[in-house]
Amino acid sequence: MNDEELNLELHTNTMLNPDFGMNDGGFIMHVKDYQSAIEEQ
Image 1 (cartoon, rainbow, N blue to C red):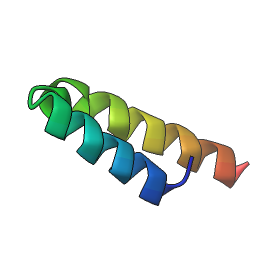
Image 2: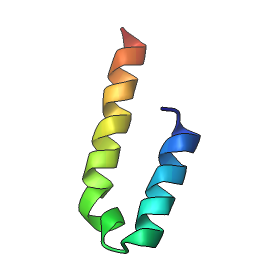
Image 3: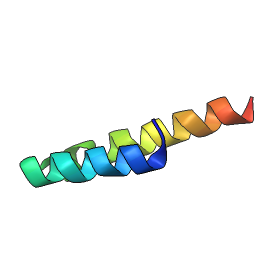
Image 4: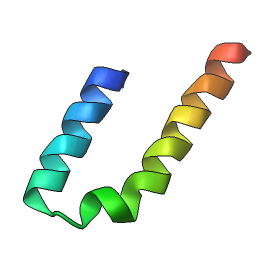
C-alpha cells in the first residue's frame, strides 16, 4: 500500500468515524515506519 492509498483509506475511515484518525494515528505512523525499515534493507 503506497502513501496515496494509505492517506485515502485514513481519510475515508475518518469521514465514516471521526474518532478513527485520533485512535489509529499512532498505528498509521507505525505502518509508515515499518515500510521505511523494509525499504532500507
